Amino acid sequence: MNKILIKNIGELLTGREGSLEVLHDKELLLSGGKIVSVGKPGELSETGCEIIDADNSLVTPGLVDPHTHLIFFGTREDEFEMRIKGADYMEIAAAGGGIRKSVRMLRDASEDDLVEHSLPFLDNMLKHGTTTVEVKSGYGLSLKDELKSLRALKRLNEMQKVDLVPTFLGAHEFPDEYRGAHSTDREKYIEIIINEMIPAVVEERLAEFCDVFTEEGVFTVAESEKILTAASDAGLGLKLHAEEFEPIGGAELAARVNATSADHLVAISDEGIRSMKEADVTPVLLPGTTFFLGSDRYAPARKMIEAGLKPAIATDFNPGSSMTESLQIILTIACLKLKLTPLEAFEGVTLNAAKALNRSDSIGSLEAGMKADIVIWNADNHKQIPYHYGVNNVRTVIKGGEVV
Image (cartoon, rainbow, N blue to C red; front, side):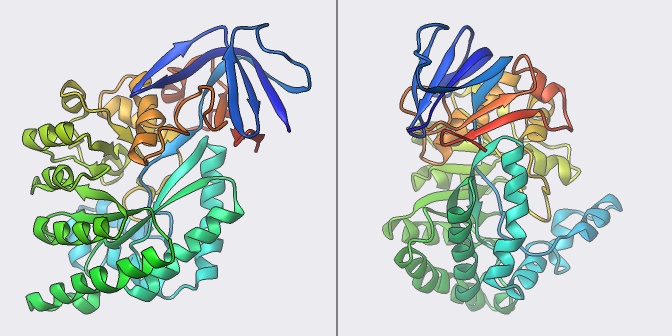
């Protein structure tokens, strides 16, 4: 059994229940892929250990990215240019771009294509310190192509180091073939999600969660509740894209259906915040998306914190509205635009992100018994990471007790 002792740690970030502590004069003993103990210098035996000298650097949990759309094929840099010239997200979507363009590209790709396309992105995430990633389907929007996406994701989970948390997002948009003028077209697609997609996903054990894009012009609150109720009855955990553009009641719905998280929340109402707090729904904020869309309207993170919520932070990595694998740059944006302190931002990509994935018992903290997912940084303290932006500040990544 390989044992590792990490010595000469400068700052060590660890904690529970949404509050990280900054500790000094600590060493970490790892064995069997887990943290065995945290002790003072000289307390832990070096016998039989591989020694890693942190050289008085920052040591944190492996970063957790709780909202991505990694499974796609082809890119949309043309839409980036369109936004620069003045088009907004909804205008691009109405013209057949956005999610629907990614759907057309993914449908033309094979499962092997999706696996090969995704591997470099996962490698970049790992190099930037991310060790666990939630990944949504949602660019297939048919039974065949949603299953193809989730099967590719299952293969990816077995062939590389990053732990992937699969989410079924068949309700990401209405596909072109169900966008007719009649309301029955919408109803038909929703029935396919409920009666065909969800049972198949559950039967093959391809997802842990079901997500719905609850938004003006996409899925209504009533439609979303119908889908989420069916998913819950089938044994899936629940997530929502909610209040990204308009406060239509998605946050309140997340509370009502006992969702694990509600994500985006740029336009959340005060009542939505209260509902999520009462139901213990984790807010997942995506400041990189707001930044990349060229908007100045960010989620009210400070108001959420004052209400007692503990926000998680994610990249929203996707080909249209947030094309970045780096949680490090997202930490910088979270500090500048959400007004989080550097420590609060780190909580968002460790403790709180783990909670948003129902994994607080195994990742997001550096305590005895937790998975040995660890980052050693080229930095003296945690404040330097969002401060020294646009570069990769990682020195060493340890995944499951192995230097990777």
